[in-house]
Length: 366
Picture (cartoon, one colour):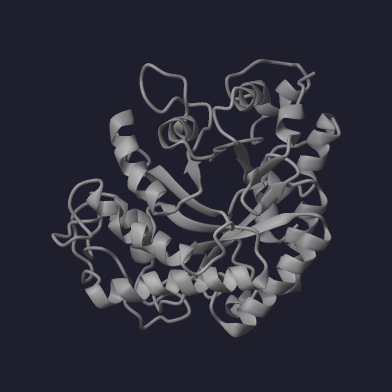
């Protein structure tokens, strides 16, 4: 039977002190009518905190730009009633012994015109172009960009005032910040466009603006990805040198933890090494890294708990990588949607009670 003690070592950085290395990954649930997280959302997060999740990263919660959201039931992080709802979430999670960070989000050109809480608003994007080159909107103006930077900073300030334990910026999966990172969607010829390093400029400025509004010891997390929802084969960095060049200005600007999103945590990022994206990120940046990607999802993985197999995607591979300090924290996604007790069951050795992800559970907050 697999020894999971490595998952339950403490972790600390700045003011953040975690009981273990398990992170609840951010997952959009669209269960906040009017953008306001209510009691079902409070209880949803409280249950995970009460069942041994070390750090909860909330579903994406949108900043104060009219085109930031494509669904009125996605929570926002600027309306006073929404912030009051988030304060209840924080208080409940803390009372259950957990820690929590909001994920601050702007969907960018992933928003179809006419959708979201402000259907008449324009959809923000670097260049108004899709990855296939089709022009469907106007590029953001310098004023739009400045307002977006300010919106992220105001949201982060509110998060610190409410009592969140860290803050995450959503810079992954083809949403607005990632659209600036990606040459497929960023065709600008000003200082926010250009080569790989130049395309990080808006996020550098957001990071600096956020750092100016939150306590110096409150960790700031950046989630990034190579893949995009629009293109699973997309790459920001094709070599370790390119990844290092991408990470360096963001790290210098003030990112404390990198959340390296992959679809399968066990897949090597570059040829010639078994390191995954989080492993390379930690090695090249020197900053703590979170790995994520199908942790706890499939039968092979679950069978490994019981000593039934040794697939590359199994818990054994994950534990070995964690023990070798390839990364620092492990984000669990859909497994925690189905089962709020997932982390507690792993901690207590109740592996026979674990089950595969059930898409039916997406219909409600379990």
